[in-house]
Amino acid sequence: MNRISERFDTLRSQGETALITYLTAGDPTLADTPDLVLAMEEGGADLIELGVPFSDPMADGPVIQAASQRALKAGANVRAILDIVYRLRTRTEIPIILMSYFNPLLQYGLRAFTGDAARAGVDGVIVPDLPLEESGILRELADANGIALIPLVAPTSPPDRIGAIAREARGFIYCVTVKGITGPRAEMPANLQYLTSMVRRSTDLPVALGFGVSGPRQAAQLRDLADGVVVGSALVKFVAEKGMENIKQFITFVKELKNALGKG
Image 1 (spheres, rainbow, N blue to C red):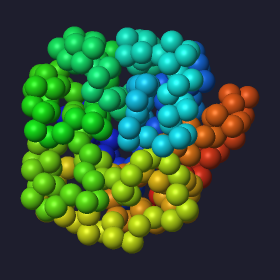
Image 2 (image 1 turned 90 degrees about the horizontal axis):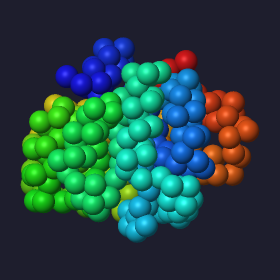
Image 3 (image 1 turned 60 degrees about the horizontal axis):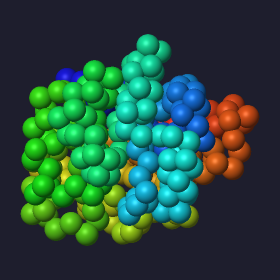
Image 4 (image 1 turned 90 degrees about the vertical axis):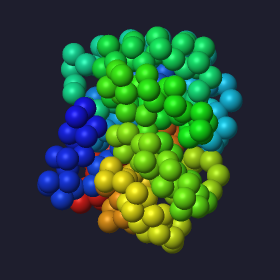
């Protein structure tokens, strides 16, 4: 088991729902990213997603698109982000997952990436534009290096498609709550229990729900439907609007999210 499985097992034994927090690595600067990761951990985050900035993030809304552009201008790339993870591993054992589009990984080299990521201390990778049918090579390399290739399941996926994805999943399954792109939304869809129940029929892996969670109220709505809740754009927006000088408020916001999931 890697850190992802261990964390979910611990939380499950304690009756807790995991808080999975996302930020775009390199936004506002590469130097700030480790401090933001540790701040999220201090606030109660259970797993961390680090977004690898990309020039054409087709699954992301305006908030993360803007963050990706800032991060690219700041010099963020796969190698720099792996270096951040390597340095973080001297300070934390929190599970760290990279979310990257396929192109940056392909440019780096899939074999080199999985090897370097494992040595840096990466626990998982999510590739939103990599379909199941084309994921075999990366999955084999990730498996060989102890890295979980975590799939996305869309709310429009038919049952047979969900089953096929779930059978090849590693780490956990990321269920997308809404049709379309990332970004905070006022309300969560009403049919999510059907989606998560369909996934659970095909796997014993943890199920996480993400896209659209804008605050504690939305997180609480998902608490009993999944093993984990992902919050991304709301945190990226907080950093963009309030900056690093408000890091204590950032920690408080993460605490509020975690409390909404049943802790504290």
